[in-house]
Length: 350
Image (cartoon, rainbow, N blue to C red; front, top):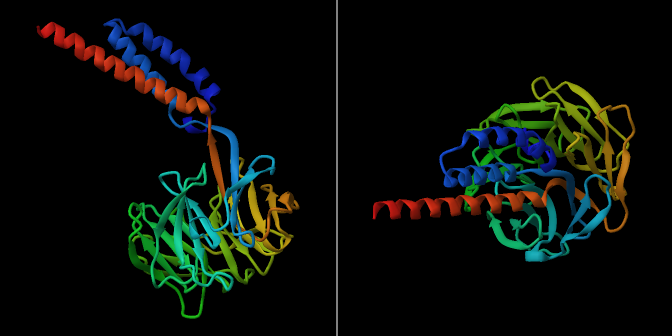
């Protein structure tokens, strides 16, 4: 819960507790320094401002754009075209290390670019190298880190590839669909299983530990599911690329619960810190925001240049500067206290 509070709110809540605890520490200056250092570490533990960035993989521009996730204002091109040999940036995900992982594959324009997963610093956009590849992978689309810490990639060959989450080494095919089908989006469910969107009218479900098929989840309303996500409400969301809608289903029964319409090439989808749905409308070069009421029309969040074929979306929280200040100050005080304690111990020994 603390991680969702701003630094000011965190300080307001914790100061009375710190003052009470401070009054109980009578033993020595070293003990008080240690306590104060610990308090600063606690205050500096990951706190995030309400400000967030929205990252957009831009197919025709071959780049990754950064927007203010609250206002929709364009910030900059985070990762320019062809950085690290990036061809078409398709799927994106944030790793446990906070870095950005991007799938890239060949097109008719750049046929020699091998399909692979690239790794970038999510804040600076610096290229950190090719993270993963597999010779059997043909058109990697969406990707996500699983509960086991490994990386899973949905491929156009109707296979899900698994890669070691630390080294990027290929662990082979984790799960497969029907021959002739094609995979685009995937998401891990609250039940620990994997849900994969197909270009047919269903989700494929797989056991999250073994990759064994758990059957399909029919979606007769959706003709081609290009992105998949579980919402804050626990529903399974799928972007229907050719049906121009987002559909939300019960992942247990497959019942259609609600839909969000009026799009053109519904593709990437994500949720902001208010739980509102953001969707890329590919053919209109727009990002559209929807409230929780499915009956309400979407509001154009941002559109036009430099958007040109928006695909996937990722919301990136912006740490407050105070986070780093408090962490460094706390570590410094703890180090100083430890050194003083060691000096005092050595003096007493002699």
